[in-house]
Length: 127
Image 1 (tube, helix red, strand yellow):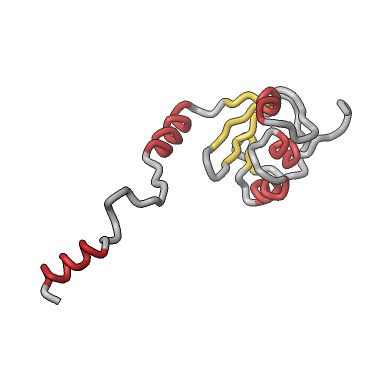
Image 2 (cartoon, rainbow, N blue to C red):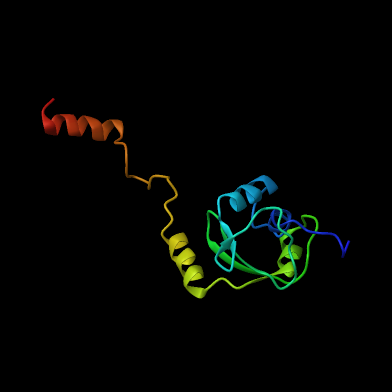
């Protein structure tokens, strides 16, 4: 397997940056995967030592290839095949976004009025 070529989309999928290989290859087509400021094709060969700039929905990764991974494995194993060189500013930005994340659920006792509160409002307004 050492002399086999490994496609970029397969590598990014196997180290779990993307959920599916199709999403990984689409990201390559859209210019979300770069090396030295140059967009890459999904079929490009991966070599140990390459550094890729990858934009996902969550964050902008800077990934250095430390070993080749030919199949998808669990996350705890996958992290051994790359080195995350993402700048600290980007990591801090993600952390601050997570802290201010809006869940979409309404807070207790806030929102739509109860039947009693509705009657009180109608009485107050004069309907």
